[in-house]
Length: 335
Ligand code: SF4
Ligand code: MG
Image (cartoon, protein in one colour):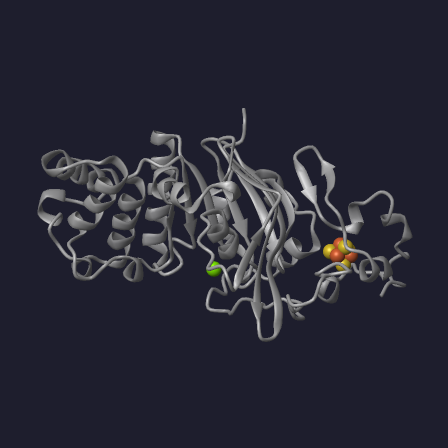
């Protein structure tokens, strides 16, 4: 099958007083029809900027999107006029965010807000529009839609507001749903329910999902494939099963080590030592070198390229590069 979305060499840079911030710096991935691709990474690694770039929702200037291609169904989104892009948002690609409060308008009923999406995207009016709103409320699991359709956002709980946002996102019958930390603001039980809802909707509608999270639990529940982001680019891509069995990249291994130990749930996440490098400099070395337990000289003079370590598993690390790995000194003599 042809991928639904292909992103190649995405760079989203911002001009600031401190210099050029390379927030997204060479990101490649693709999403197949009906699949969930998860972007995993710490905050500030460029996940949200990647999503907003796909939607072309970066303010330019100060932003600047360069990519070879962002292709959705054989069309390069970077070449579309803004007018065409506006049509495509909501209709082909829709997006939901972490905080439904801030995305819903407090002065309109949820029926009016979902209805507005239906009017804009599908041209529905009056009775058919109201019927469709009710169907959507039903589809996202809001109990008693007829009694809730004229309620205002503040009359809903956080989880129910996120369901309303999902209904709005589905109004245009998109093929790709981008969900940026959709459950981060919710408690664990509600989070699980929303993720189940997304999975159910995906099964029914054949939706592709680009899910953004910093939470390995969410990844394990949702991902078909996973891309790990670090300091503005992807460092590995693999299937969920393979990734959880034994991730290859040293950064991913650290993420697993940083999980709170079972039985000590109140313990804070062990933070990975060292800092993410500033994104204002072009990189000539591995971005993870200062925090990596395996780093050796090669890591500080040369940036790793994509290596196909095994079937379906791409990793950006010298340890897996047959031309470079042999230069690594035996254990105990590195660094
Ligand atoms: Fe660590 Fe070197 Fe691999 Fe970078 S290239 S992740 S520093 S081993
Ligand atoms: Mg974010």
